[in-house]
Amino acid sequence: MLAERARIADGFFDRLVGLLKTENFVLGDGLFIVPCSQIHMFGMKYAIDVIFVDRQGVVVGLVESIAPGQMSKLFSKAHGCLELPSGVIRDTGTSVGDQIETQLIP
Image 1: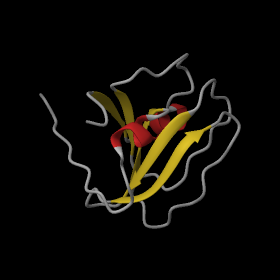
Image 2: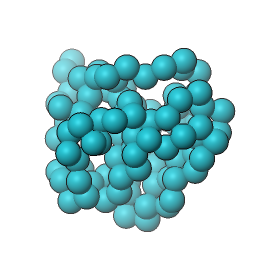
Image 3: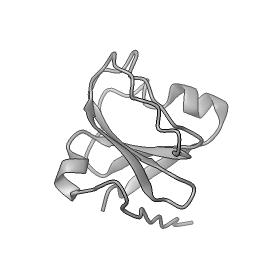
C-alpha cells in the first residue's frame, strides 16, 4: 500500500498549489497530480518521495526524498505523479516497471 488517503490534483490551481500549504505529510497520505511529468520543491518545507506513472499506471520514474528547493528531472513518458511521504518508495520496494493500482471509494 502506497497511500490510504490520496487526493487528486487535476485542476490548474490544485496542481499549482500541490503540497505547498502543508506543514507535513504523514504515512498513508498521498497526492496524485495529473498531468505531470516533472515537479519542483520551491517553497516546500519537507522532503517527499515521488512516483511518476504513465497513462496505464506503470511506474516510469522514481525520485526518493527530494528536498525543498530542488527540481526533479523530466520524465517524458509520465502522465502523472504520486507524491508520498519520504521513505515510502524504499519501504515498499517500489521499482520502475511496477504497476500502480488505484481504488476509488465513493
